[in-house]
Length: 406
Image (cartoon, rainbow, N blue to C red; front, side, top):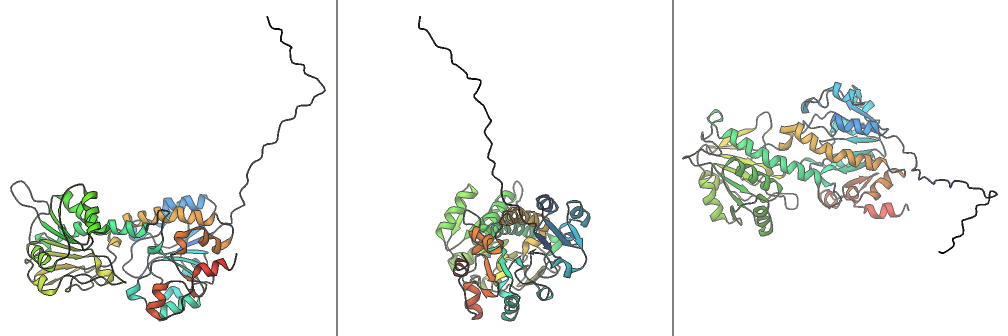
């Protein structure tokens, strides 16, 4: 048997535990976030829900919300107060914040309240934007970030996608409503019943709005036809809705024939160079059946029906050639609680990730490529090529500005 020597332990040895090295992140600076009440563009949404505010406050930041800002979305001041927000009655006090979150464009009233180096998240409504208004924003030397231009890590525009999905579903809901006798419609049910044919729905545009409009209409049992000049988008729509439906390129003859048989026509074309192509002429509308419904979701960028004119949530429709026209811009605001939740789900983690930066606004933008492309004003310089060409204002590449500070 092999003889094993026992280990010898010398009592003179000293055994000391190793120190554990822990990583400490730099202490974050508390950020002041302000959310004003929207009074323009028929806006009923709010940028953060009470639950999102609670998360931000629990991470050590300060949130101020203007009195009754959440009321149009059925959120009370009490809910925000219990979430940790400060309710402010004076808009001037609110605009002392480091970051302003808005769901409507910067108003004329708010221009004078802006502070230098303030970060302002807000939409840009190019059709209504004036050069004078833009110049005043530049004079204030703010950092303006366009909500609709923010990209996620996958390269998509999450807020635009969410609002488009809402608009597609909402368009079919409105069409179903205005087909009823109570609203001077044809008096037919969207989905029909056994032995009675369903409504015929024509959708012009196979983007995100068109896709969700088609899904909703098919879910109701309607017969759907989709027109778009992109074969790729038509193929994608066929794949995502999970069934074969009628699709066609926008051929005027075929489109006119489909419209003459349609009960509902949805305009959901994407803008090209800021303007939506007008593909449905007035003679085409004249051939549509009396009491049929047009929902022009593209009205925000001019509309794709020649007979379309802007309406509002308070007075949403008008009748032309015996056809009911619904041409309300910012349709998602009509279901503001759903839309607010969708926006808040995107902005809350984005704001938290931005506040983790200790290098100031410059580092925040550099660390988030999705914000870099969405920044259209940077401390008195215009960094949007689209706005530069539209208003003939000098364009400055934001990458060059930030790289020069490294």
